[in-house]
Amino acid sequence: PEEGKAEFDLNVQYGKKEFIEGKEAETLGYNGDYLGPIIRVNKGDDVKINVNNTLDEQTTVHWHGLEVPGEMDGGPHQVVEPDTTWEPYFTIDQPAATLWYHPHLLHKTGEQVYKGLAGLFYIEDEKSKALDLPKEHGVNDIPLVVQDKRFTQDGQIPYDLGMRDVMDGFKGDTILVNGAISPELDVKSEVVRLRLLNGSNARSYDFNFSDNRAFHQIASDGGFLKNSIEMQEVSLAPAERAEILVDFREYSAGDQVVLRDGDYEVMRINIVEEAQQSSGIPEELVDIVPYDRDDVVITREFVMSGMGPMVAINGKQMDMDRIDETLNLNELEEWVVTNESAGMGMMSGETPHPLHVHGVQFQVIERNGGEPPLNEQGWKDTVMVESGEEVRLLAKFNKKGLFMYHCHILEHEDSGMMGQFLVE
Ligand code: C2O
Ligand code: CU
Ligand code: CU
Image: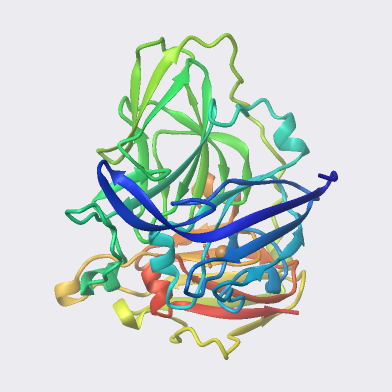
């Protein structure tokens, strides 16, 4: 292939997968039975993707976190009819990051993602290649797509929503990593990079290790952080990503560590071999120039409210024919995002809403009036807003077209917790 050009084929297809031995589940996948290939591009590449829909239903493919023009974004307007091919093309115009792709069909996103349609999208650049980081895919640079499922007796994963699921989102009782239940990962005694994606419909995770060891987060949704951050637990809302470095240099062959969500075992990591060498844990990663709040041209408010089928943003539910906000290209905006959904009566409890914005990577500048945690101070495209919280972010949109903002609890999105904005 020509340098700077990249072309990919994505076949959207039906699949069968034995999540549980001897039991075949009906699934969906890209180029396979479940999930999809990692799409790898370099900054500056001209990319074309051939999305061939072999299903007998409509779908779309959205590039979550990519900054591309609205017509290429793969939102609910770019429907790919059965037996047709959609051929979006775009230039990669943003720094190295771990992004992902998934369907975005109106009212159907939850079901299609749950059945298996999701894949990772890596961008590399000069910086990501130059940094002293683990870079051997599958050896010390490991993709981890974390999802939850609810299996029937015969190992199927039907997407049947009960009232509770409409309220809180569809959550499973079994956690999968890259489509596998109780997976094990073999590594050497070196620094290992885990690229975590919360690819679940509705569940959030608090990732930690069984020995309460510290690790370093090096990247958030939209790329590397300014500095690596030492932490013992990283929380990911649906659609959020984190890259972390785990230092196994002090371990020896035969040792085992468990990646957990709270107390729940997600993945066993076996140290199987002494490493000859290892990357380090760079302290300084990239420059992130903070936006200057004095440059804000317009401030907009987004109030997330309601419960279950009534969830709304600014009191409105998604209408394909209504544009909710009109923005100017390359103008700095401040978005004030609040969550006024609160549990009431029998449905007491929290109603978190992770807000995702298309076509941009933004900077979170405030959480409940204070400084956001360090790992939210990098590029973000999804931000958790718990009941009663207020989050402020700064964003500059550099691609034209029609885009979405929505809650990434997919059942909330499918219920209509989504709006549209036009950048012109
Ligand atoms: Cu990950 Cu609008 O989506
Ligand atoms: Cu998106
Ligand atoms: Cu929500």
